[in-house]
Image (cartoon, rainbow, N blue to C red; front, side, top):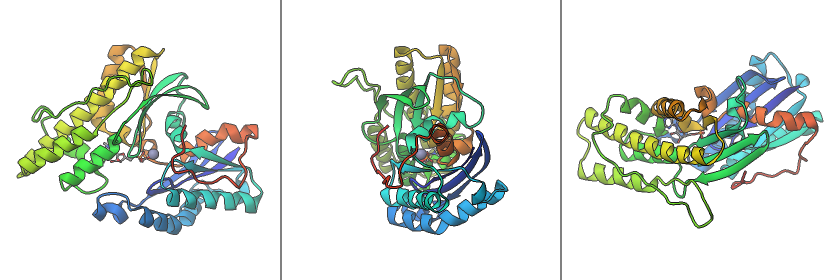
Length: 334
Ligand code: KG4
Ligand code: ZN
């Protein structure tokens, strides 16, 4: 089965072709240059850029796969969660192709795509505990099997990636901030500044493994206000100290959750899983814990359509199709 998938939930316009489980092409058109000067994604500009980019990205993807629409057997698109104006572009395009070509169509939850991104190349055995860390989400899921996900905890305020982006903005480093802070932190001393680590008690709704990053974000803002950044090395120390605090908090809660479920396999997915320090420390900590780790390659950590195609594959094969009246849902839950 050959699947064409598109993903436009935020600010990346992505398409991919999957043939019998193998990615033939996966293209992501970034809008970073559009949003850079605003220090964050401007929804209206994101929708407009998706409209400009969507068809060329699909054409390039099919071209790279040496296929045309005649060769496609099913179409998939992200239908939430995300920015509704952005979601609508990819979703409408995919539905239009399905309608015009009389092809089966499946709508995919963006979070499910991230959780299954470790299945794109190689296979990660179920069940696994997955830390989903991106610009919009920071959650822990117990992934029992394809289509079976149990939420164990989530952030109560900012997502980890959002904290990276906001701290980068505070430090005048531009958008998106994660990659810049990651690179800058390599030259810094992670012990230079002791930023606070939030430790949340399980809420009233039972044992939840929640996160909080807003206190840390404010602490960095206050630090920069009181100690204006005067040198590259001062900036590197802030970046490294902030990053270390984020990684400490992520690992603390993840391993607390790992102790509460049967867990021999740990997965990190989402844009922040591209962070080099997080990748290094999670591998070390998991080895000590006695669990294996799977982290997708960098290109499948950040938003992409290959993960949407992989998530859609089983449903397309089994005939569990969606109708073309499926709408975008900004706050879609998993
Ligand atoms: O998964 P993603 O592409 O989009 C969402 O669904 O949100 O994640 C984007 C987020 C941004 O906040 C970006 O700053 C962060 O991932 N990010 C990183 C790194 N690369 C991307 N954060 C920390 N370190 C990185 N190397
Ligand atoms: Zn994402």
